[in-house]
Length: 382
Image (cartoon, rainbow, N blue to C red; front, side, top):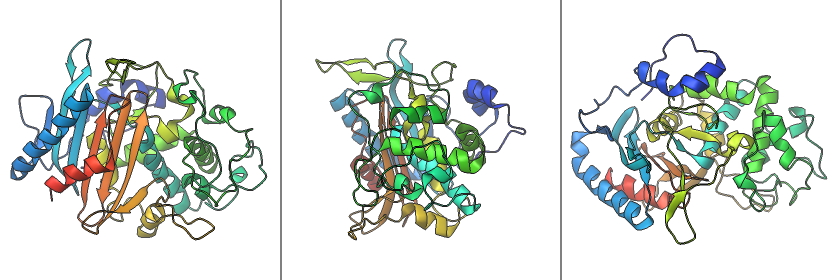
């Protein structure tokens, strides 16, 4: 699924403005299966999986109807082959623009495993010690009553709080990663690090600052070069508000009466690492496949990401570094992440035993994107 590069990478700001246009010009489509002519909503459909695809369409169609989801996109793959990718419904209800595999959605917390890849590369390069206090890389972050490490932050056991009230509806633009830390940096830890699992997107704000410090360059520049560009994720980009980003969906929510309405305006610049990226299911397949076997990352690094962290009392959290891990009904290990954002929901799963990958995205805040739904789709392609 890796897309070829198109020569020299443009300047960063130009990349932001032209990302969607470049993706089409670069010919970055998977080579394993040809895109069928005709309906642009259909990306790939492997003929040998036609029955599975029809059943999966029925599953997703029922979910869309029941939940009034305006638009949804899905991709299923194994290794370098896309078995199926297709868009459903509308990316823009006002203008009746249909979802296609190129439509970019907010992937929410699926940004965390994507960011974890950057963290892993720095560890492999010897530039980052996961068990050093975060002030080693972010000296401006205030010391707390207990030391906090990057490993703990990345596993949600670092004691950093999550959103309070309506903070996740922030419309403030933060010009850089360090400025986003102002939201919570002076708050006390909610528990001693290593003693409790407490999900925290703000912890990943701090992870992005650690990456900046260890890499000695801006977080998003490092992400683009070492993750997005390196893997050929041509349709993944930070959710900047000002630039026109080709194929970006509009975002929807449910109103007080249950009707679909435009989602509130938000600015995700405060949380790129933990929930601020746009992507497509096909790009998420590329990303997950890079974690299916050693290559992009070393074998030991993959285990580092996927292995559950352990609390001080010996209990496992089920969450490693940016990835959750669980066993399915077949006794197989599935690593995954879900994502929720204002106007978006996402799920991405990778079965480590059979290599099947499922990615589903929707443009409705309340859409029920879950491991259970992804598991139903995976089951059809076994």
